[in-house]
Length: 313
Image 1: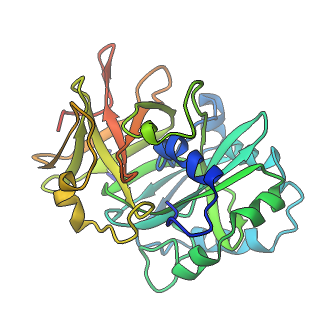
Image 2 (image 1 turned 60 degrees about the vertical axis):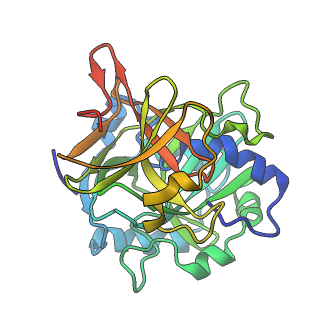
């Protein structure tokens, strides 16, 4: 079916920076999923709506108003992560170079949720869901206090590199220190991951998400190949390390990346539409990685005759 990080600020704490290297691998994207919902919950809770890359949906606008005004009796961990129990299927179009961010919010003994700005906070530019003033004024500490969370991280600014996506996201809009967001995924940091080392980039990380990426024919895709022959397709680039990184810079990104032995970067113009889906029992298994500038990529996997990509780009 074909349809619709944080700048390195001077006051960033070492804890936040260490957290980024592993957790950032999951974004973005990572971002959207019915990740913690069972298939039965998805079927019961999911409704169908459409949100274009230039959001004009009255449904999106009405949701934007309600969350910021409510008393929010369940604005505490772990209740906030229960947003995943009420989701809807949403189609987003015109996403290439669309500006967004994700807020990672951790609850002890429960997990970490990813809350995304896509389709929200829209002003003059319909393809910008992270206005500069909201980003500048955002405070992780304020959200940590509001939700009694030990860890909140602003993973942005970021920009999508696909053309469209279909995802399961929460119906509820949460106001996080002025930024309107919706839950899109839960993540788990793997055991043994070293949060204090930058070596976690170029490391394969598993993700459980319900989503489909669409990349259009005759458009470029930006690819990492690992030493084992696995192809990773970029899903988002960011201004976390380099605040001036642009979409145009991706054409020659290989001159700037610190690639480990056996890794390579290339740009390909697609001969046909590329579609990426999860695999596994529920079609939710993905694998992601990040490069040394913390751009995020999803792998083209093959397992038991299942494929993440409809062809190998």
